[in-house]
Every structure is written in C-alpha cells, then in structure tokens.
Amino acid sequence: MQTLWDISPPVNANSPVFPGDTAYSQRWSAQIGPGVPVNVSALTLSPHVGAHADAPLHYRADAPAVGALALEPYLGACRVIHALDCGALVRVHDVADAMLDAPPRVLVRTRRRTPALWSDDFAAFAPATLRWLADRGVRLVGIDTPSVDPADSKTLDSHQVLLARDLRVLENLLLDDVPAGDYELIALPLRLTTADASPVRAVLRSLP
Image 1 (tube, helix red, strand yellow):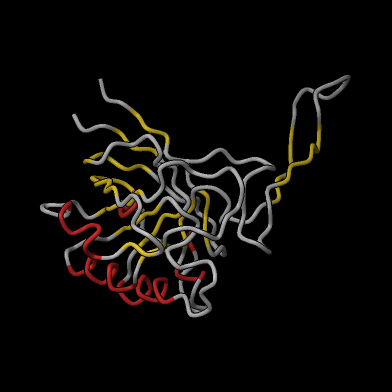
Image 2: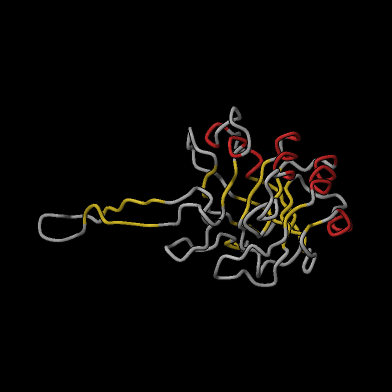
C-alpha cells in the first residue's frame, strides 16, 4: 500500500503570513437553520498563505499568471533533500551529495520543526543553488520556508533566477516528518487566471 504525506500546513486565521500580506479570514454568507439548507462561507486571504505555488507574475509585471502555467511540473517524481541547519541560505554543497540521478522536482527541508508564528529567521535559496539545480534538469523547486529569498530582500535575486530559468516553485511546505528520499509529488495550483500565486494541497506519495 502506498503512503501519503500531507505536506501542506493547516490554513486558518492563525496561519502566519509575511508582514503586510493579507491573512486568512472567513465569514459565513449563509448558515444552516430554518429555511437555510446549507452553510456557505466567503474567504479572504493572500494566495501566499500556507503551501503555495508562485507564478512568474509574482516577480515580473508582464509575466504569466498562475492559471496559465502548465501542470506537469507540479505532478510527478520528486526528491526530498534534507539541508537541516544550513544557515541563512541553501548552498550547492547542502544539496549536491543528494542529487545523483535526481528527478526533475526537488524539495528541500531546512527546518527541524515549522514554527507556529511568523519569523523572518528562515532559510532561503542562494541564487547559485537554483542555477545549479536548473543546469541539472530540475524543473520545480520547493522549500519549507515562506520564500526562496530572505525576508529582507528587496531585489529577490532567487526569484529572478526562477524567472530566468523558467523554474516552478513551491513555498511554505510542511516537511517536518518527511524522510529524505524519492516520492511522487502532487501539488496542483488552482486555475486562477489573474493571480500571482495559488494555494496548493501538496502531498507526497510513496513510490510503488
């Protein structure tokens, strides 16, 4: 029997968000009661809450929205690499030993435990690492932190590498309990035709 790992953090009003971003909120448009047969809610949230896929539109004004992206990068063989205690940046030497015969999707675990509250003390990708991965055929990268760039970055150098190398990205993954190794990734973004990102329900499935 194949095993599933849910690598999506729970999304609710307590979900941490980047300072200044729109937190999750929910209100009820209808609630079950006399003459009302269903519950219906309205949600307000940034598409960057929880596990999400950034679109090129997030970091270039005339780039494609998330709903225009091909789905193939978000579905298929994937390798989880542990780079625990790597410091502020995931560098090439943190992942190189685990990349032999790697599939085209790579998720990097940097945290021993995901914090419940926002903290800007998180690991990001060094731009050189993303270029190195792209040179080896990687099409999608993922990380268990809010961003591939440091929280205080104004130039978003790693995001610009994603754009230049046409890499897809998943951020805010929950990899706390996932062993290093190979899996099937399923993390499809919604077909939001004008959005800069999309929430995903990201899962890993053990290989047969």
